[in-house]
Image (tube, rainbow, N blue to C red; front, side, top):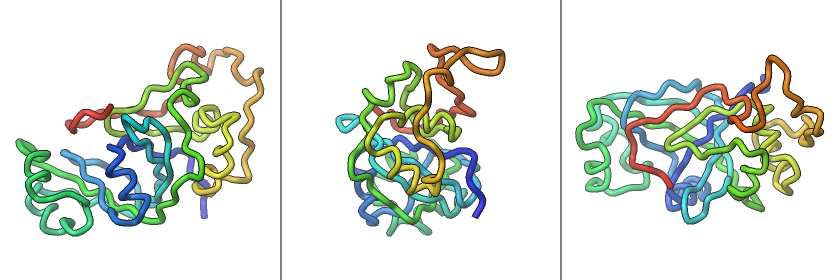
Length: 193
């Protein structure tokens, strides 16, 4: 298996994060087309009141279609009632079902306060890609670092970032900007806290 170069960080309401990590919900919904390659590792961030990384999963595919078609194909796996779905999708012409498997909750969640220890982390409203270097930096010094990286198939990589790694150079961002974010996307989704 090739080592992935980035992971998808999904912001989810704690109810949905828990359902995914318990294996009860295998489809995450978005209000427009999302293009993410199958096999992409997923890191789950549970929004307020949890405000922490709580586990991982693997994206097996994305089904994009009209909202009515997505509901028919995935209603038993998306973890919401039809009325909630219709309210969420109101006005959308396209929807995506992110198909997830291999959920693995973390023994010790990584709180937002720890993720902000480098000064540059802001939870995405919907999703964001993180490079592996950024992920290691965010996890540095937390007891769940090795476990989370292991879930993603990255346990053999070092999790400690030495202070010298933060020295500005022409290719690196300053410590006050989000470190090494590959891409951030905000979708037309219900606001996440």
